[in-house]
Amino acid sequence: MGSNLSIFKIGVGPSSSHTLGPLLAGNMFCEKIKTRIDEISKIEIKLYGSLSLTGKGHLSDKAILWGLSGLKAKELNASLQDEVFKCALEKRILLLDGIKELDFDYEKDLIFEKEFLPLHENGLKISAFNKENGLILEEIYYSIGGGFVMSEAELKKHQEGQDEFVHTPLELNINNAKDALKICEEKNWNLAKLSYEYELQFFTKEEIRAYCLEIWEVMQEVFYNGIHPNSDYLPGKLHLKRRAKGLNERVAMTTDPMGIIDFISLYAIAIAEENASGARVVTAPTNGACAVVPAVMLYLKNHTVGFNDEKAIDFLLTAMLIGSFYKKNASISGAEAGCQAEIGSASSMAAGAMATVLGAKANVACNAAEMAMEHHLGLTCDPVAGLVQIPCIERNAFGAIKAISAARMAMTRKSTPVVGLDEVIKTMYETGKDMNLKYKETSLGGLATNLKSIC
Image (tube, rainbow, N blue to C red; front, side, top):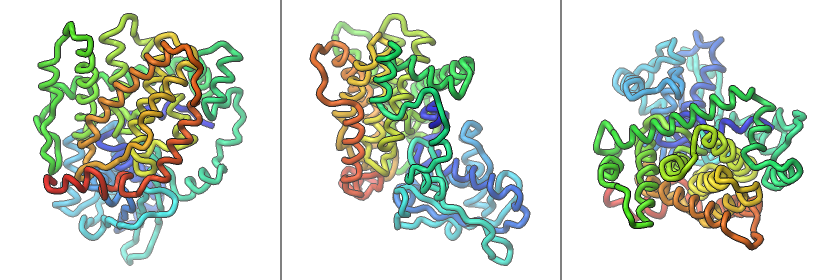
């Protein structure tokens, strides 16, 4: 068992699996070769499966070069990103770990393989060679969703249940909703309190508070940036016009009770467009679904009474706990289980968190989370042109709206739910495994193929 804080992490768009993941893999490889960097004369990168099929649209090719250049996600800005890629593409130079200049041929040294590696849909291989073209070091990495990356050996251990941390004794062990509800019932806690007490096993109260407030601050910054963009159009061949700036100028309070939907859509679209532009965002739990949680939080902050920093911390703690159930028992990767694993998980997290900060007990919050996912089951991942734009941006808005509806339904129901959160998480994963590969972030089916004429 480990901390759940990393369910939320500050990263770079447009995809946690396909952008942040390769960047982190590059960072990890740099750590492995630090003592042998003087021997290295050449780096070769191979992208497999979904990373290959939608890699250019998701900036996977650029991200792995950022990572191998020693750049960290928090340090990235547009000028640094462009500098590294232009250097590799035009000058044919890769500054390995920010230290050693290597000759680099983008067309030959970065290879898009169509095959899938056996352990996960998002695989990549990095190989380092000496001047005689002898192999110095080679590593396979898997980007398993939400910006979480494992080496081949680590993922094998994880899939076999042999992780090093599995047997670490903890006073609070929470693997699923059943565990959470049992503890909450015994101690009369809500999900936020349970998550807080769980995290105290790894961090101080000051560290937990500071981390959550930093995440919340960045979420709000991303929204602000989304309604004040530097460009009217998103990058990529779709030439998609950004909508948040104009929507922000038009949306206004109204006597129409449904008018609140316009604000929720604004919050989600602004943040999702920032992600689609490749800007800094919070992975929540993925980049493709990064706008759902903050859109619901902004709704609570701007349209309800009493939402403050303490409520924001409780919201994030609850959401990360629910997110951990999906990560441990199913998937948060669109390439593995379709968009239900991304937007669906985010909506579920937001629903349970909203119910909690509005006073719901753990069983009610879990019901809210269950309902939100139940109505995302089967949602495919078919990004047009491999870009996190169509249908991804609007899906964040719908995910936020569903989360709010689920929270409200759960808090007003009197009947006992038939379906539990653990059951719907299991169902989502099974549905994802049954889903045709072309609907799992490969751009081989659905909208991605039916709109080829505009690509």
